[in-house]
Image (cartoon, rainbow, N blue to C red; front, side, top):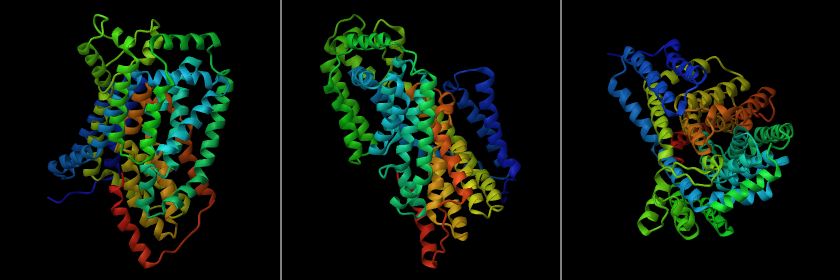
Amino acid sequence: MTQRQPTIFQSVIPILVLLGLIMTTVLGTGADALAGANQLSLLVASAVGAGIAVYNRVRWADIMQGMVHTISASLPAILILLLVGMLSGSWMTSGVIPTMIYYGLDILRPDYFLPACVVISAAVSVATGSSWSTIATIGVALIGIGHALGFDMAMTAGAIISGAYFGDKVSPLSDTTNLASAVTGTDLFVHIRYMMQTTVPSILLTLAAFAVLTFAAGGGDAEASGVDAFQNTIASTYRISPLLLLIPVLVVFMIVRKIPAVPVLMIGSLIAVGAAALFQQELLATLTPDGRLTLGSGYEVLTRSLYGETVPHTGDATVDDLLATGGMAGMLNTVWLIITAMVFGGVMEAGRFLERITGAILSRVRSAGGLVTTATGSCLLFNLTSGDQYMSIVVPGKMFIGAFRRNGLQSRLLSRTLEDGGTATSVLVPWNTCGATQASILGVPTLVYLPFAFFCWLSPIVTLAVAWAGWGIRKQVLSEDQSDLVPDRAETAGKVQ
């Protein structure tokens, strides 16, 4: 039997089902969506999509192949996520993060804390090229500092994520930055310079917004005595030493030297375990069943910090909750979410639903502003449906490069659009790998920090405004040879990681 092309109505049904179930979960039940509700919503929407695909004579084997393909593509992200859990647990038990919080409270003041979070996160992310590593390290420390200073955790998380994703967009070391330039055939540094037209206004507006929030919050609610008490609680539980700061410095150095993320996270975790055995023997003793530290009990506590829950006994329940970690086990809900999101993405791809939606929209667009709007919307659509930011760059990049070329638009306009619409918005989707991961790391649900992730939702708005205003848009007629070159590079862009 010949496979039938899905209609527009059929193509949007799985998306509407998914969004309806998610909204019902969040607004109706108030349940912890990450604990299973979102995963179930994705599976139900996948079943609806698969049913429509089968009705359109798509073979079940092709649907299964689509799901397996997308799940396989997510395995590197899942591995990194588990290693981030190891890193977080070992850095907390070793005293690395408590030390960063302790010294950070001496430096960061309530009257400029939120803008400082943006700047610090941006600086680290530009240096490392990784928003995930930035949030998993300095971001966790900043969350603790913000808590001690009396700031709402959602605001702090929004500031951290805004800065981290600014750096992820503009750093020449970033995988998404290289991917967007490669998929469109744009020189890397041309791409970065052109992004500044939209990225700089977005980050300036973000800093202004956090300055206003800081002023409105009165610089946080914590009194100086409360901050001192928080520092004293940390110091009485952990051995604070500036030597422990050498561990994050080493990790940042390895990332800057372009060592792959997996060995960097593993090395950072194992070194921290050694530091815990050396610096935190009193803490380790309190975590053993009988309060006595032996070779066997010490080994059990240290390994548990990598894979399971570890709660320090500080005498303050609030501080205990803040410094508690889940290790790799704490990331399993997110892993489950990513797998079900990939199942949904595979069904949408096998059923050709996304191809049908974007094709119908593209056929009606001619102007530069319209093309940028459609490409931005497609990036967001792929973040919503594929659950992966790389798909939101590669697929729209391949789809739109021909349309941009036929309209005489430079490839740098598309590469910028892919970053503003794809990279920046990925962290705003609860079931996307980025949104789910950052929510797990920071302990703040995606939809809770979303209103304060100003940079991430301002980026697509600013790029649309700039495009419709016609600022910096130059038309260029490519030669026959250049026209042939762009699709070839786009085909190989999926290999850039």
